[in-house]
Every structure is written in structure tokens, then in C-alpha cells.
Image 1: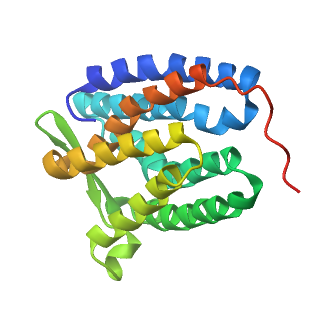
Image 2 (image 1 turned 90 degrees about the horizontal axis):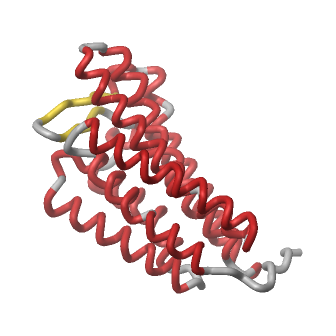
Length: 225
């Protein structure tokens, strides 16, 4: 997020191997945890891309900045609102799963409307470099029909509610941690809220490493029919 390229690269260097180890652990002990176990790895790559955004700015290369800003925002706008409810889907009992599938579909619609127009309108994504912070700004289609605060609220709802309503206590704890990141971002980092939220979510994803190494399901989840 904020701070510097070094901070982003160090965070990526911690999250990527930790995420890879977590995926391996989930594969051996409980494969229904595989999608959620990938979050630290994915967040690590997102932080890597932000480090490269910083690097592009240092080199004065506008195309480099745009390329890796687009890669970064792919995670922020499209991957997270799909992947989080999708991951929760596999952890839930069969009778609850369809609700989380609907959240994943809604996340894809919301994220696609936010992200895909960047390809048609290059000036809709603006990357601003502040003192020790990056602010991703610009235009999204939802701006034509509602205030940005409402758009952000829909995004938060799609990402957080599946975690908070999970039947697994560990996932609910992770949801509370993400809510804490949202609160801190709202109170102190509104000037760079996308970057701040994703950085904080990356740090909180280390809880998933702890959770999955602690959880060793003895019986695989039954297949839904």
C-alpha cells in the first residue's frame, strides 16, 4: 500500500511463500480449504504488483505504471469480490452453499462493471503518487447512477458478509479482522483507501495461514447432491 516499494515487496516476500505452504497444507489435510488457502498467495502477488507500480513511477515510465496498476486493480475490483464468497462456498454445508454462490455471482457483476471499462477508457484509472502512499482514482460506471460511497458499501457487503455469516468460527474471525481493516482505512486512510485496504487485508490473511495449519479435518466434507 502506502509507504514504499520496499514495503510492498517485503509484504509480498512474506505472503507468497506462506500462501504456497498454506495451499500445500490444505491439499493434504482438507481440500475444501484450498480456495481460501490461496488468499495469502493472491494477496502477495497483489502487493508485488503494487511494488512494481512504485518502481514504474521511480523510472518515470507511465506505461509501466498503468500496466501494473491494471494488474493491481484486477485483484481489488474483480478477484476479491468473487474469490472470497467462492471460497466460503466450499466450506459451508450443502444446504447453505447456494447463498454464497449468489454472492460470488454478484461480486463478479459488481467487479466487472468496475474493472472492465478501464480497457476502453484509459483515463478512467488514475494512479496518483502521494507522500508515502498511492491513490488509485478515476471513474467507474456506477458513478453515473450513485455516489461512490454506495458503490463501496456494495463492494464491502459482497466481500465481508460471506465471512461473517460462515458456519465456521475461524472464518467469522477472519471476517471481523477484515472489518477492522475497513474501519482503520475509513478513519485514517481515505486518501488512499484502495491501497490501504488491500495492504491491511494482506496482513490479516496471515491469520488464514495460522487457521489452516491449525485445522486438520479428520473427515472430508460430504459431496453435495
